[in-house]
Length: 488
Image (cartoon, rainbow, N blue to C red; front, top):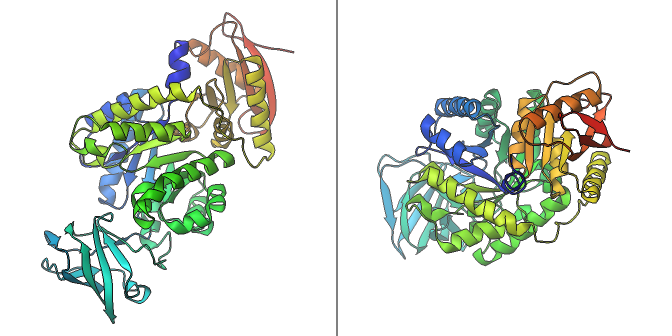
């Protein structure tokens, strides 16, 4: 691999793409991976479990054929309020009166004056004058009065709606749990099928992540938990949420409905900044290349939006409807990758992101290794990792050279698909740390990621490189045959 590709290509922000009806066939999935998709997102708010299982099976087959790790993110439904079921779609007109029938799952026929809302408690949580937003805020209602389970409203901004569309109530903190019974069912299904990341929706406090953590621990797994920031309450508890999560997502769709639109850019910058300080990967999501749902090219404003997120040092950018239901899923991935690669060149000239705010033992060791690598102009950083945490912390330092995640666990490699600048190296754990590193160096040399005379800083455990506690930093050099020698 030539040096330019190794440094620039790998340091681009990772690309997460949502899989849906437009992209769930094997050929399309393979083309998206070839185009540069790093993580496939499965939205558990839509579709049935069997379809999800089939898609995961296809993704793993595509991953095996591609020869590189592919992450799978299961996005749980969360406490999202939705309309109930009804046939067809409806046009709501300004000043029209609409009654929300709380506690009702469905209506037999479409009736623009009566809409079912399965969440029964909404009637007791709303107040007269409260806004009720439908369909990502495109339709706005205002509560006029409440009678029992019937919430009477008037249409302020009209538009077309259909069944199961989302409901947002910006002035109301609903009492639904972040991980309810349906989320638990989805989570257990996702874990049974080996997903790599689980996103918890509508996180309002760090405690909202605990049920997912408990279920993951009960399954004997170390699946990373993604906290989706899409409610204003989360901004009040941001540091605690970031510290409790493994990954954070700036879910701008619902966040932009729950808070004024003009406040979203500053909220995004603040969330990304906090993640950098805490050493957490962060995904910026929603409507990044929205026009590509219908068109083969994005708008210039969309390109600037993606580039801005990357210049803020976001770890990954996400495609939603563009790849799930859009007409050009492969082109959308190709476009996102091109933007990310070009933006990565510009990021190289920006000041380094803030240092990690909290230093514990592994953070201190990865920080020391990153500093040493920069001082000696090392060509690579090699980080041994069992579950992906050590390499995640190393990636948070954003060193200028590539990072190699050395592990004997394929699942750990898949977690690195959200970390910019990280290559994967799968090796067998040896009885001595030095022997494991030597095997990794030989593999990297044969694959063209290292050349004779290049130097590397390694971060390993002891006495076992991968399974031992992270404790050792070494400077090594590669000879012309791909063997290592320690440097004084």
